[in-house]
Amino acid sequence: MYYVYILHCSNAKLYTGCTSNLKERLERDQNGYVPATKNIRPVKLISYIVFSDKYKAFEFEKYLKSGSGRAFVKRHLV
Image: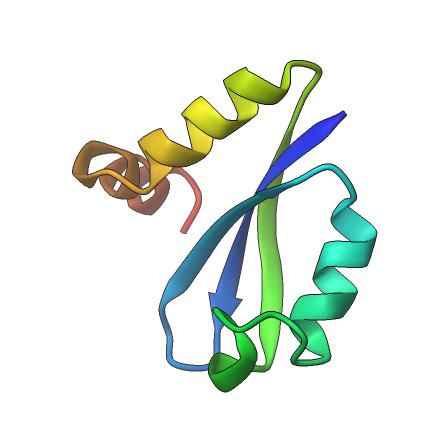
């Protein structure tokens, strides 16, 4: 399984990522082992979506990082 997840960061911004092990990735984000989130901790999980196909997960992550994807997140998840 592959997870696309959205975190709320201490700088009031959202971080979107993709992983095959959500629990481990969240622990790494929260403990400062991920360079992208190290300086914007604490982070809080807002939402995640599960995919069985790795490529669909990465496509959806890419979409969420686009302009229309960010608008989708603001409309439906935040």
